[in-house]
Image 1 (cartoon, rainbow, N blue to C red):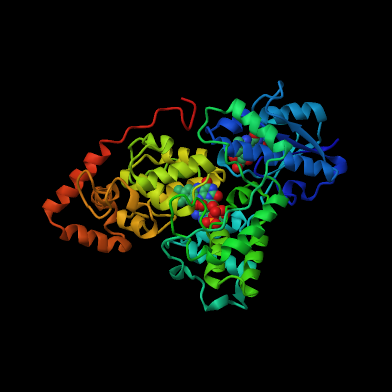
Image 2: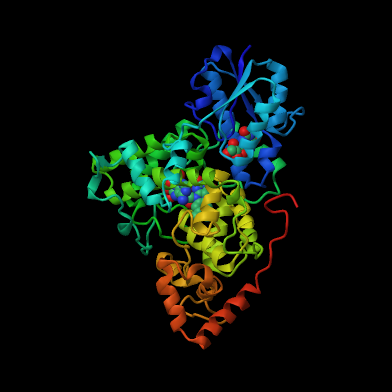
Length: 517
Ligand code: FAD
Ligand code: DLZ
């Protein structure tokens, strides 16, 4: 009897651990398009299309390499709609002697795999996901040995472990971190190179039709679908990034320009998270760009830090702090998500741009996610669970293991500062410095209070004031709190009233956007 190997939609790597010790002769690979996954949040149409197209291409590549793939499509009339239902049906078809699977990316599925162990009636082996630099047990050990968890220390260990940008035991270029060089604002006339095109083939066109038929009322458009859906296309995306955008990635990493939706960012997270790109191999190729003189150290170090630093740290924190992380709300934020997060209808230019690119591309770059959307949700006190549902639904790269720590930990401080040392709270001045949005905004960034003022200005002080008991002890907020106290009661009252007046204008989103109402 064969072994049944279910491969999930974000396990599309030829080196996936569930296949590593298998041979085609006695293995049935099972891939399942299931309603439970396409709708557990109402994902952006382009995200569903990406996952299903990449799954179909991966199945075709496995078959070409000689594997037997049992592939259940979403429109199969017998489809039960769940992984468990499909695994049970496949067991009836193939009578396997066991089931072997790579651990999933989300907590809810890990619990389902636990049930398979008890209920399936055959041996179920759940193998570690080896597509990360840091195995989870190593992360837990690292975290257990520390009073305070900080990405920077973890990142240095990952540099040592991989040897990336190392000269013996010293960091290449003499420093671990070149972040101070990576804070360039936008310059007028800045036009980043256009990302490469990936024309939909027949498989992708079928999926695009299926998604517009079946998920036509989900958020977002399919009109600009341009994600790599195979390892070969992802390789082309990597090559284009390394030669065309990496050299300026660092300098403009935090910059935002209206209408420039990708800037010098990699656009590689969707393919990385699906498993189409190996992260360490990607970083080795980025390192070679520096060693061969084609990209500066600050760009290459900045990029490698995102991939083997932040991405790995975020994953470790997810598995360390779940399931509590999904409920965390250390700042007691209870305001409902405003409807403009879905409609884009707001007079705040930075936010309307962030929602527009999200709707058009299932993508927004990091600073839009953190310092526009995240910052707004933090300052306005939006309930973390509603913000997390939104982020999980709308981005092509969103899986809970990477989305939730970024939302709850990095953006909203809902974990009380476990993941990041201080809240990423900023007033309009930051957005003005890092973007070209404010010049054409209906609000005036230099005006501090009143109906014409940029709402971020008063919201910033409202946030600090209402969280004073919780945050005043944070050394990194010493100066802002000193400024707040020095301001005097009248000015404070003006800020608070201005923020309250703005908050009263927010319309809660109608139920049903992110989850079935
Ligand atoms: P680049 O800016 O070019 O960065 C290169 C790579 O570094 C990315 O592809 C990504 O793999 C990695 N990376 C960078 N920052 C992070 C980070 N903070 N966490 C994890 N990986 C990182 N990333 C996701 O992959 N999925 C998400 O659902 C997601 N949700 C986010 C929500 C919020 C509130 C914030 C602040 C960040 C989120 N991120 C998420 C992280 C980051 O914004 C995206 O990885 C990045 O924008 C992807 O675009 P890119 O490939 O062009 O990245
Ligand atoms: C995101 C997604 C979607 C939309 N659809 C499927 C699917 O039909 N079948 C599948 O195997 N996986 C899908 N996925 C990805 C899973 O949700 C992902 O594997 C888990 O969230 C774990 O990260």
